[in-house]
Length: 416
Ligand code: IMP
Image (cartoon, rainbow, N blue to C red; front, side):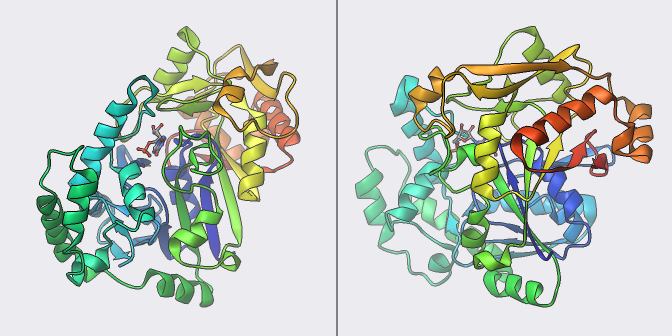
């Protein structure tokens, strides 16, 4: 199974970093294909936690990474990632697509200005310049790595000034000069990502395509306009890396045992109060990029069913069963009151959606010694109530849950 895609099935923060690092054991290349430095993929190595924004977390296993043309590239963030990674795992090899769109200080400033203009309707972006980079890209006003390498972006400064001058206090030439200096610094990493992936796949090696954000933040399929400005579904791996759909052989969807969302937008199973606060604290549910507290909700079957379909998920990696432990009862949203089979598309219908919950028994704390026992015994060692929770989800989704995360470490996984 050489082309493996890892995607988030919820609103991001499902634990894709750890999952990709786990699944990439034995793989030879990790690929980022979407998003930008809005992502924060965390992976725990011993006692240290590594949070990566541009490079895939699977690089800790592969030691080789590729940044596809679908990535909004913030070079400074990438350089910081390389430094962190190399301090933790030694030398890594990185190839950047010359077609990747660059995020410059202009796009970062515009992100904040546009959010201010939206006022009460703001999206709660990560302010990493993602939306404005996408606006420029699709308006054919973007600047790619190769454009700066070949000095082909001279007249864009004047266009940017005229289009964006009313919103920025920056001198656009300075933003471009800074980007050009950074491109010069990394030009030795620029290479043909598409050919590299094709070569690896045709020689039978495994390539892990590590998606950023989650399905419900997809620009077309998510809870628009409360979404990110790229595609986050499995099909985006092919487009954003430069391979055809036949290069994708397996899709692993990652879902947390409950749901979280950071930023604004509809969230049908959200709840607040002491229980939400306790799950947030137990799980350290604060944005890896912005530090913002994540909103907490129960697992949402209609949402996950939609996500499994959009991604053609072959199997699910269910993370953080340990975080949801030690609750007397847990809830599972099995449908929305009165809604049909399809997932509601408008913000107002999602806000009106009334979840219908099933209550199940909770399971006891999974501490250090319990974790070691479970790792030795496997799925059968889980408390009956935890197995019932997992199997009820599978039954509702019709997609197998093959892996279950029971702790923060890369290896804290049991297979079902
Ligand atoms: P942007 O991608 O920074 O424009 O933010 C758009 C929306 O997506 C906001 O609600 C963000 O909080 C959310 N978002 C962006 N990236 C991530 C992520 O990696 N994890 C979770 N939410 C994200």
